[in-house]
Length: 130
View 1: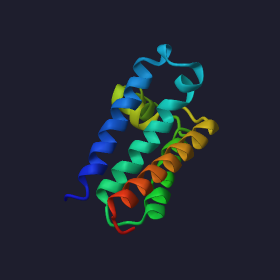
View 2 (view 1 turned 45 degrees about the horizontal axis):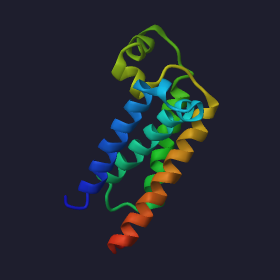
View 3 (view 1 turned 60 degrees about the vertical axis):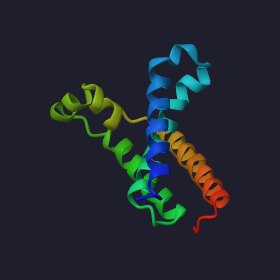
C-alpha cells in the first residue's frame, strides 16, 4: 500500500490541475487552454493505473494507459442517444468526452510520456527498483 500513495497523490493532484485548466481556461495562454486539459487527463489515467498496478513496469503502465485513452477517444465515434445522454452530464463528459478529435491522441501521448518521465525520475531518485 505504501508504494501506491505517491501515485494516488499524483492522480488527485493532476485531476485538480486538469479540472482547473477547464474552469480557468480563459486565463491561460491559448496553447495551454487548448491542450492542457486532455494532456492532464491522460496523466491522471497513467497515475491511476500505476496506483492500481504498482508492480507493473513503467512501459506496461504506459501502454495500458495509452490503450485506455485511445479507446475512450475512439468510442466518441459512436454517437447514439443513450450514450450522448451520459456524455451530456458533467461526469460523463469528463470521462467519455463528447466528440472524436485526432489531435487528442497526440495530447494523450504527450501526457503519458511526461508522466512516465516524471515517474522514472521520481522512482530513480527514491531508489526504487523498476
